[in-house]
Image (tube, rainbow, N blue to C red; front, side, top):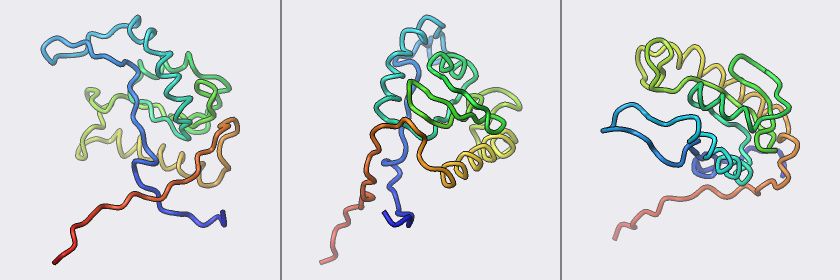
Length: 159
C-alpha cells in the first residue's frame, strides 16, 4: 500500500459489543444485573475481542471498565481516560468513560449541556485518533484484515 489513506465504510470500522449478553430489568427500570452476570459473560466478550481485533475499545461505564480489567494486561496510561493495553491478548487502545446516560456532570448522552462529552470524551478520542494515525498497528494483532472497499448504496436509475 502506498500510504495514501483510503475511504472506509463505517460498518467496516465499527462494532459494538455489550459485556452482558442478556438484560435484567424490571419494567424497563434500572438494570438489575450483578457481578455474577458480568463474570459469566466475560469469556464471551473476550472471544468477541479476539475475533474483531479492535484498535480502539471505547468502554462506556465505570463498572464495565472494572470488569474488563480482568482481561487486560500490559496496561500503560497514555492520556487521561486512555491507555494502551492488551485486552484478551489483542493490542489496543482503551478509552474508559462513564455511561452516556449517567446522572449529573458525568452524563454525555446528549448534544447540549453535556460538558463531559466536550471536555473528556472528545479530547480523549482525538488523542486516540492521533496515536492510531501516527503509529503502526498495535503489535500482536496477528491477523490484519485487508481493507475492504466501502459499500455503495444501490440507487434506482431514472428511466
